[in-house]
Amino acid sequence: MENILPVAIIGAGPVGLAATAHLMERGETPVVFEAGESIGANVRQWGHVRMFSPWEFMVDGAMVRLLEAHGWQMPPKDGLPTGNDLVDRFMLPFSNLPEVLNTIHLNARVVAVSRRNVDKMKDAGRDAAPFVLHIVYGNSDEALIEARAVIDASGTWHQPNPLGSTGLPAVGEKRQSQHIVYGIPDVPGKDRSRYADKRVMVVGSGHSAINALLELAELKRDQPQTVIYWTMRGTNLTRVFGGGEDDALPARGRLGTRIQAHVDAGIIQMVSPFRIREIAAGVDCVNVIGEVPDGLETLQVDEIIASTGARPDLNMLRELRLELDPSLESTRQLGPMIDPNIHSCGTVRPHGEAELRHPEKDFYIVGMKSYGRAPTFLLATGYEQVRSVVAALVGDFEAAREVHLNLPETGVCSTDLAGEGAACCGTSSTVPISQPVLLSLASIPVNGVLQPVGLQVAARDCGCDDDCCGDGVRSTTCGCGGDCCS
Ligand SMILES: Cc1cc2nc3c(=O)[nH]c(=O)nc-3n(C[C@H](O)[C@H](O)[C@H](O)COP(=O)(O)OP(=O)(O)OC[C@H]3O[C@@H](n4cnc5c(N)ncnc54)[C@H](O)[C@@H]3O)c2cc1C
Image (cartoon, rainbow, N blue to C red; front, side, top):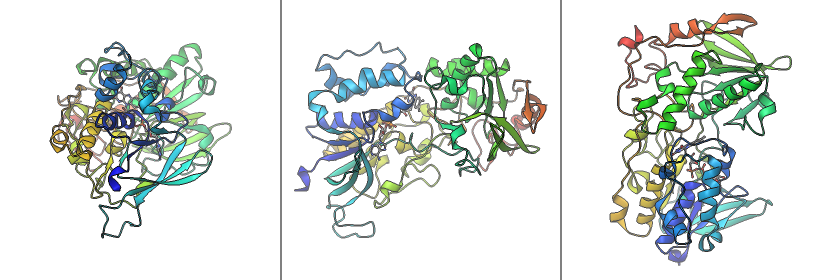
């Protein structure tokens, strides 16, 4: 009886849909649960952002084959889609295919997964017991659905990291939530008035932060009273600015080059390191209190954009036997392979079903969520993961073992973006940061007094207790005894 149960997929993001396609190619009829009103609900939330990977790396082979059978045409492979393009031109056409349409259940949030009549402690009969997914629908109806295997592709976007430098919410963060947006607001579009001529702090050092900052810099051209602060915990700007022309994805390289130019021109005022402890109400503003090398400082702002990365929702998996990396919360075996202190997108070696296995048989976490808190995930990785996982689920273990992945190099050797931003990081060539880092010398109000931020930041750039080699983590970019610290 168990064999006729479907494979359940949690999440109709790009990777969940790719899993659907691979299962259908293998003759299976999966069942997909998507919490949003439409497929690609997470991508829609940053849909205005132009991705740095061209179409070539954005599409999954099995989805393409099914689409092409219905006359779909691939967009120009070197074009750069926005998130909305990815949904409208690829994911939606796929989800609307007649053979796919009925497999996807929208407004259906998976709140828990377990096994029939078996809780986490029970061994007997565990592997043979069907999975049970607890679903809560948009109208609050609930259901228990059984499946023979579960692929969790629910992403991490909806679980943003808090602003506190400890990984915990800063004191007052929840109370001041009306001033905070997590992720990448639509600054040029619907959120424009929220930021125009305001003092805005962007927190984080990843590509999400950079995207928000570039959009704010554009806004400042028309609304010159807009003040843009950029704060982050770390100080390793080589990693933050990325590999520039050395990046194999030119659009990704250009993000760093453009942001550096805005910082150099004083359009964006960088305050780094700035380790947020507290967010307190001010008069028509908020006071953000952070640790700087000389003690505590306060920045007064109107709005905060928290681009501090995201973390996986593990609550819904509480009854399953998982083996997770203790720091990244990725699958245990994947952890050392993707640790952003060591690896980057380009150096992550191909991996598949074997590395994604948990003690819970026939349960897999794939896509963005498989990387846990690591920000280095690329879609091409997820597509290869699900090809391999599906092969194993249908018993084709040879195909499951043969993983192939060729990711574009970023042009910097490593990153300290862990937990601080989205998307991608560095690769293999070493870029020592012995040269002085250029920063804006514009002044910012600190405790009501104007202070030159550039000098303060440059003086601390290579401190041995900074992120470049501190916090107990020695990166490949610089060493505590090396030039960077002189
Ligand atoms: C701004 C930005 C730019 C990026 N640019 C690139 C790029 O250029 N190149 C690249 O390769 N990668 C890029 N990425 C990284 C990555 O490819 C994307 O995040 C991608 O969307 C991950 O796909 P996913 O399917 O794993 O997760 P998601 O796209 O997050 O999809 C998860 C889906 O699961 C649903 N869901 C969540 N919880 C539940 C639940 N409990 N029950 C049911 N459904 C649920 C969500 O609604 C969502 O639809 C970027 C990421 C961001 C944020």
